[in-house]
Image (cartoon, rainbow, N blue to C red):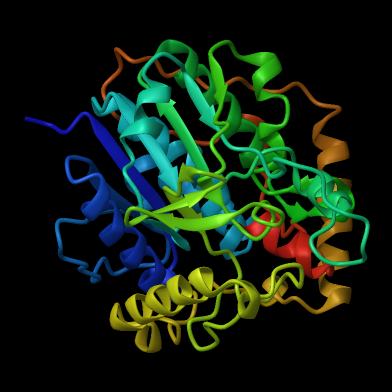
Amino acid sequence: MRQDIAVCTVSTRSHLAYARTMLASVRRWAPAAARVVLLVDDPGKQVRLGDGISIVHPTTLVDTELFEHLLYKYNAAEVCFALKPHLLRWLLTSGYGQAHYIDGDAWMIGDFSAVAQRLSDANIQLTPHLRSPLPLDGRNPTEFSLLRAGTFNAGYVGVARTAVALEFLNWWAERVQRWGINEPRFGMSGDQKWLDPVPNIFPGVVINPDPGVNAAYWNLSGHELAREAGVVTVDGQPLVLLHLSGFDPARPEELSGFQNRINTAQHLLLASMLRHYADEVMANGHAQWSQQRYAYYRWWHSRWLPIRMARALLFHFRESRISRTAQAVPPPVSLEDPPRTLGLPGAVRPRAPASATLSSEAEVHALSRR
């Protein structure tokens, strides 16, 4: 019998050690869940992960023309962002009752059943960046950088097998496919900023209030991390999902290279957890996988500022032209449809290098990438 819940992530080969670590933690804390990774840059389909992890390739979800368009338009992170709603939609139309996207650099360290239970009476589940005010002390991240990154963190998104959730995924996929650059200075943060209006557009959106779900450097400050009866807690609530964006296993004493608000030397429990996590990432082949070059790298993916700005300007020039033309509407997908790949709507068929890369502000850069 098919498992009712699927947990998925999107990865390039260079980040597979993180993805394997996250999915191994899912096996421990949500053993009944199917575990799926969308591997973006394995053109030869040669990678095998074992451990019951299923690998999906982009052309299983979208047609070749759309995939090539995304590769030309976006850098590696942006392609991953653009394919995320397609992956969630594919899992729902394949028959899973719930699909939970979790970033590969997260770590499940508590019972996931409460998170799944919150989704049982909802269509969509999101987690906020901020759960309490941050002091104006000059440290990163700031409330301003979080404001630019978006209200919700797209490192976790849960959807139930409902018509509303599928409508949301169709809407999200179309917007990120067209406006998915990761340049917060232009008001864009890949797929993440598009989550801001979701609670106002779609019914049945639950914003998970638990501080232990998608806990990270942007929302742990000011909250108490403790171990109670063998269970790690945040403000007395179980720590279920720790999101370690910007973590380097070679420097486990730092929570993230993109923040200076939390000093692990003053938080011994957190420091111990980070050392354990670093050991698992290294054991899952970080030294090997991190050296893998993105298979679809192009010169305009460079982070050199003049190239980033040129791509941003090209993107806006192109989109201003497209916005003056009639937009073709792709055929909708319903829960009754069999799983299938989706192609390009006619309005986005022209191909040009038109996306901006990441922001120069370190904390916005990290929050946008999750």
